[in-house]
Amino acid sequence: MSDRLADQFFDAAIGLLQRVRDEEGAAIEAAGTLLADTVAAGGRLFAFGAGHSSLAAQDVVYRAGGLALMNLLAVPGVVGVDVMPATLGSALERVDGLAAAVLDSSPLRAGDALVIVSLSGRNALPVEMAMNARALGVRVIGVTSVAYATETKSRHSSGTFLKDHCDLVLDSKIAVGDAELTLDSVPAPFAPASTVVTTALLQAVVATAAGALADRGIEPPLLRSGNVDGGHEWNGRVLEQYRDRIFYRS
Image (cartoon, rainbow, N blue to C red; front, side, top):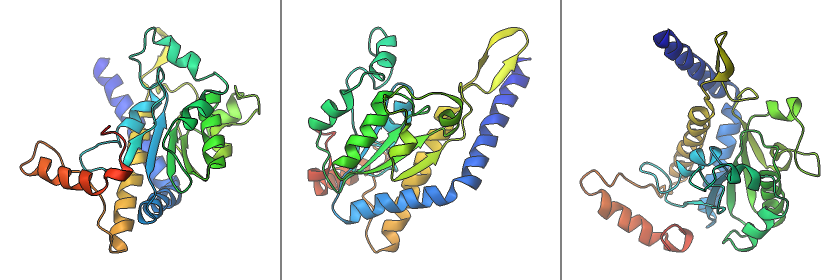
């Protein structure tokens, strides 16, 4: 049984990845181009996610093979499950006004780009983060499951979802509930695939951005692994060159 369930999960994840590749190709290209445009124009890049959605955001920050200019927009208590109790993070996502307070004290400014990852896109924090960032002149890329907007109700007073306040939307295709498997003998669905799919989506966007910069004759500010010879020296040069657009060093 366990082997068959493992195969079922892999099949489900592969199926979702194929759907995203086939159906979101134009959006991925546009998102990568937006990041490349921002880098070329001297802007800065930021990524935000709450709870487990933060995993995909963190995966593109200070990452071997990734863009050195991608910064994590951190909200204390919601980035990951290290806050105690872990349920506090879920509660903070529903607090009105928190996003405005975070942005007011962040380095985000007009001309920057912000990737917001939220599976449901229904809570106040990601909705207000997108609304307020765009009001500042920041370009916003939302990574979410559009299905939630038709099958659930928004928890924001406006009745809107993250997808309604973005310059570009990447649909992860994840079903409401984020669980791919069921068994008659198990009372709840299980085996979430959102992290696998969302992380792949963002890495596809970063790859597209790197290629778009290279096509313009601009060397992409990429980091190398610190575990290969010369990696630290390479990264030191990149971090120094772009120190005024990198915020995870201080």
